Length: 340
Image (cartoon, rainbow, N blue to C red; front, side, top):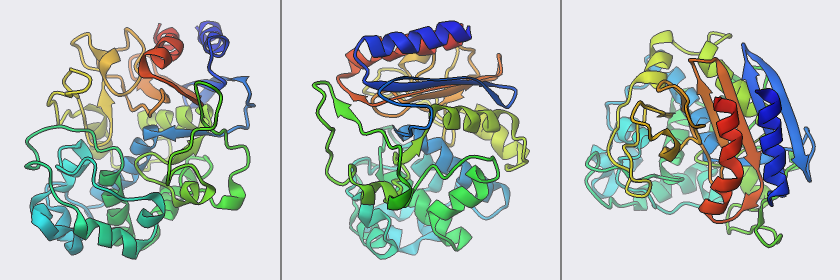
């Protein structure tokens, strides 16, 4: 299997991916870690929304310690959030992408500044009644989670995630890397080879800001080992019932208008489900994973998932920015090989 996975990743580079890494972890250890194209095993990639479970995992700790009740309004913990009708928005709705402010504006450097972050919260308005529909919240919702981490932990959210999640797991800092610690970062490039420039996301300062909805920087091995920790919890970081809930309890199964399938979302993860549509869900599942497989992908096909039935955690990261059809054709065979 490992040879097939590595071959598929190699073929993705031959097909036009400039650089990629692939990793498979099993029983808490990395059993495959390869780099292809213009990168090395030490290179670190932007993982986009594959960051979201990392942030959610710090929220799960708050839940387990009785510091956070997701059924309560965000405004119960962050009164400044209650403007413009948002007083009814619950923490659960924020985590399930049903909160009603999917495109609320906030730039990376604003979000990293507590005062500017709160000012943005106060200005946001609802696009629809919270809880009535699913629409992916790419960035705004996770800045709310960052604020909750800071309020309830009394420390910078980036430090909270490092101190309470990644460091205990033996992983490096994956979110909010200081500018002088960003060596080895692999720049995304568009299909014609030019650098991908997105205002507010593509600078060292933006990477240091640690966008909680999509600013993680990691190797494929880092991602695979994080997912193994979600499977086994070797360090006892999470309350067992809370972790089990996050991995199994579908709290939102509303339709995804973009992907055309029920979303199968828990508090921070996406489940494969048993309807045969696992590959249309936002996790990058390989064809044939078990219904209990969980994960979350990132933009431009940063893939990360775990299948409890096999014990395998899989991660694939790359730096191509192209249309979704092309990237799916190049990257999904790698996930399929890992699922076999």
